[in-house]
Length: 159
Ligand code: MG
Image 1: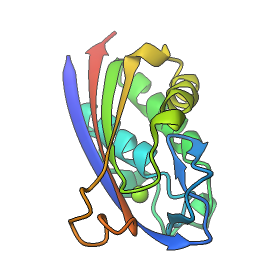
Image 2: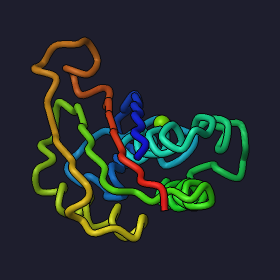
Image 3: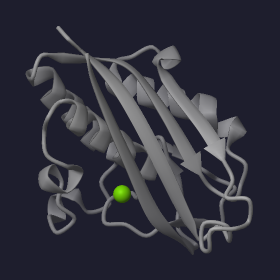
């Protein structure tokens, strides 16, 4: 068994789409500023996978200076990362993740995120945990809904 952890942080600006866990958060007036689609949940999951498999970090495989990854759907990057992990003879047992976002409330999106992520990873949705927390209106930009922060932990088993 191997464990991995990852986190991510993106600032949020008005009139951009907010994508988390492969799902557009339609009632968010703000979205991530990023080279890719800015899916902070998937980026944390990718770093957790890479760390658990003893690989390098997300920026090594998917540099934000590479035009290939401009506005890319992060689910594509997640699938590519899972392929790297499988090449090392590891399979995912489960993920647990946390999203820190002041607003909007994410509860109605969580089942959709689990489905989207499970599909990208060929997993059962029950193998993916997603918790949404607010920033209690503190922590600067996080508390003002001007940033999103994510954490992910993954367990791998050797095939
Ligand atoms: Mg990111």
